Amino acid sequence: MQQTVFIIGLGLIGGSLALGLKRNKDVKIIGYDANGHTLRTAKRIGVIDEMVINMKDGSECADVIVFATPVSETIRLMNELPKWQLKNQVIITDTGSTKKEIMKAAISLREKGITFIGGHPMAGSHKSGVEAARPILFENAYYLLTPFEDESYERIQVLIDLLQVTKAKLVRVGAEEHDHMTAVVSHFPHLVAASLVHQLSFENELYPFTKQLAAGGFRDITRIASANPIVWRDITLQNRKELRNQLQAWTNEMSKLQDLLSYADSSDIEEYFATAKRVRDDLPINAQGAMFSSFDLYVDVPDYPGVISEVTGYLAKDSISITNLRIVETREDVFGILVISFQSTDDRAKAVDCIANNTTYETYIS
Ligand SMILES: NC(=O)c1ccc[n+]([C@@H]2O[C@H](COP(=O)([O-])OP(=O)(O)OC[C@H]3O[C@@H](n4cnc5c(N)ncnc54)[C@H](O)[C@@H]3O)[C@@H](O)[C@H]2O)c1
Ligand SMILES: O=C(O)C(=O)CC1(C(=O)O)C=CC(O)C=C1
Image (cartoon, rainbow, N blue to C red; front, top):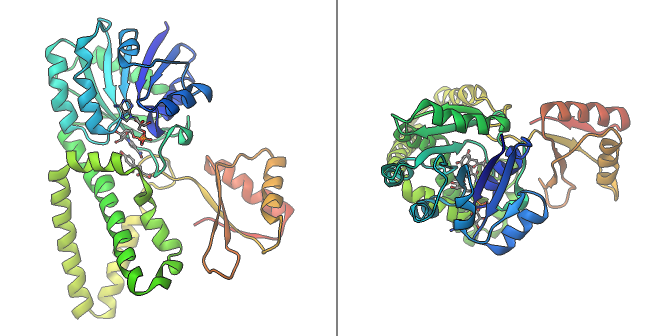
């Protein structure tokens, strides 16, 4: 049976969901974005099957409506829906990073007999926009659903059946619990990343050379500070209470660090790092999802013209797809390390063999 899915907001997440759902040939994707350029691009590059230029047209013919807009916009737009002639059995969902405020706003839909099931795919990136969308983004990632407690099993199952094709791990949680857990592993780390970048820019006024030294570590820990500020403004506003609690916990941890720096001996300091390493090493970072991972391979290449196309040429010859390519500059005067990203660990393993078979360059997995 054909299903029509209407996606509102065609950025990284709306676009990736559209591409993921399109793998099911019985699903037709209609898209809308407030940004005309994004909307036309989404149609041109085949992210959506059809575009509409207002929400009403898409909403009235949809079996499922998905909001993939910044969370404050989602709440504003949800309130528009009851004005239109929606299908009787329509299911409304969203992809927002917060859930409590959204579920609160959904009460008015529910009072009008409209089904709303909150959703949040726990995969993403610091990139935004439709060009960054990927069909595999949600594969193996947790995809949290926050239906109302007494939502009918059949209605939830319709949404689960639809989303299954993305290969995400669908898990049901309460909205409050959701906002607590995501504050710890997602929202607060974004505040920390932004604050480290602020700290660097302050430092930079006194020691302008410092920025040049911001190599792997600083770049890794602050990658997410490059995310869309509007998306993160809205998340922060909606999850303020949990974020204040996290900040208090962080402040307590920092004061422990103050003590460590002032009084601790070398074994206590080593133990501090060792405990963190144990916990960090146990995180499931090699699977996409709980943490987004792009399966990077570091290649130590010599500095001569054409070396990058030489390496990518060998990979192309063996039909190994790459998703990204960059040079990590560790020193200004020395050619950096070539970092090639792959879609899967399998592709990366094939690349290691391919480079070993064709060159003498050393490869590393971080
Ligand atoms: N970026 C991530 O890593 C990530 C991960 C999971 C969930 N989310 C959530 O998914 C949602 C979308 O985030 P994104 O990363 O795709 O952002 P994005 O900036 O890539 O895309 C958002 C899109 O929404 C459009 N938009 C904004 N206001 C609109 C309106 N009134 N009507 C129609 N379109 C509108 C924008 O033009 C843009 O194309 C957010 O709620 C975010 O919290 C983000
Ligand atoms: O990988 C990233 O860049 C992300 O920030 C993705 C991330 C996260 O914090 O893990 C961001 C927001 C979400 O709602 C879910 C995933």
